[in-house]
Image 1 (cartoon, one colour):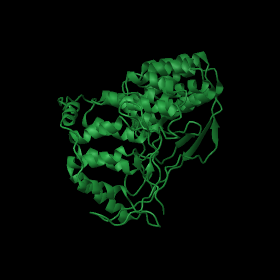
Image 2 (image 1 turned 30 degrees about the horizontal axis):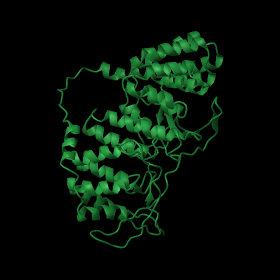
Image 3 (image 1 turned 90 degrees about the vertical axis):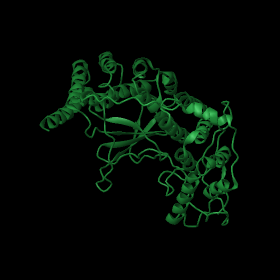
Length: 453
């Protein structure tokens, strides 16, 4: 065994927007029994990239798009994502919910800052040390060691705001160990566990440290975690900080400063909390991350990305980007009339490849694409018939597609059928027509089943 607890990587962003990023490095630091708790340990393994096990698809630009089919596994009983569309809410009886005034968290954070930064106590420093200085047994992390570590984290949380300075001292050192998704610790890294402790402690001091960390870290999964925590506590109050963190980190990644860090979580953040202000950033990102950018544009909360997707499908310099934009438009065509109208015009123009239209037909039939989170913070890829995983090696994009397992009303099915009929009327390709008719037949079957119920 050896000491491997190191600076976690590329330069992170400073509070003034310059500085240094961090990259989790697998580690195990040898220490003897000390202080307040028994030593804790964990089995360390490096987060691996998604790898393909089935034949690759070659995109129009020559990039290898590898995919894996996921066969159903009854033993896993994993519930796949349900496709829920705006029509579901419209058909329900309106419920009036009284408005709840949100506390001004930014003002509370500012008041806490005026009181001055508190010093960590020896006790809380030792608690943090017990969590971050770990002894790795020859057989790796045991269940007993993991439970001891979790117990130590609970004790730290019980200290409340007095634990915040000690956590802050560790976070500022840029030290960590990446334990990967599925770790017995319950977190992909030690830092992730400490950030969760801050969220449990809550209060102005903890929120101030979460905001400070958001403004300096360049770990994509960490930005996503902090964005979720801050948004839960103060909906809408930290949107500018969140989008700024994503924008700056994407710029670092595009400049090659993140050494292969997986940026998928950044696009997931924009899908959840982005607005019209991030459209230009996503358009720019299509040059490097075409699928991620197109999916994020399609899924912005209020449809702000649809005009951009239409432009990309019509005018993007890369035929691959045009095709990806078409596929993204197809999966939200029922939600946005301008998207469905654009599909018909694109079909009439006949400028996109048959392969793109085959994928668009599948999307109209209910297939949806999702950005894959390999950091362990979000649910894994579901197991089930029709699920496919995709990996783009050159840009390290990982995503998957899943069919619509329920979730479509009769009205939504009929809307999809109407769009397909319009496309069939202008299609000049026998191959595309066959794909559209296949999607139509599948939807018609669903319509009959829904009507029977």
